[in-house]
Every structure is written in structure tokens, then in C-alpha cells.
Length: 105
Image (cartoon, rainbow, N blue to C red):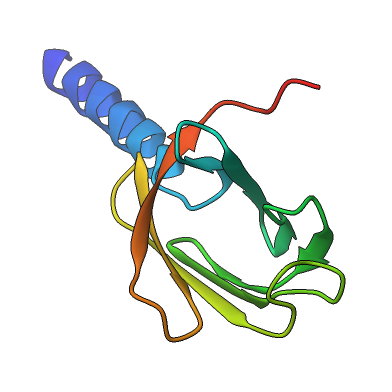
């Protein structure tokens, strides 16, 4: 009986850890000066525009919409762990953004 309970607890913990390992959420750069938010294939860009992109659990890419700075540039992101995402804007060197809470407005 103890073996089954231990196994059940391990499965629950593993399921919780897996659900946290996703690119979905709020991300910040420079102490929150620039932010974006991903929810499935939807993103709110650092300029505040809502658009969609190519989504997988650990990666996201989109083309910057017209009206945003650098419109037309492709942004590629790769999850680097639960708290960091690597962001590459066009051909620029990738930079690391950090997970943050929702914006306050």
C-alpha cells in the first residue's frame, strides 16, 4: 500500500513540474522596462500590440506587427528553463529575458 501511495505522489509532483515548464506567461527585460506576454499562439508584444505566432510548449516566433517598432522583423524565442527565455530579434544576438508577474496598470 505504501508503494502505491509513493508512486501516486511522485506522479502528481511530476505532472505539476511539467505544466510549469512552458513558454506561456509574462516575460521582462531590463527590470520590467520591456515586457511581453504569451498565451498559446497569442502574444502581447513589448509595444502592447496583440498578435499571433508559431507556438510550441518551449518555443515561440512571430513577425512584429505594423505599428510596432521594427515592424516586419521575425522574433524567435526559446525557453531556457522555467525562469528564462532566449529572445532573438531578426539577425541580432540573442538576449535573455526573465519570467515576471502580470503588468500593473
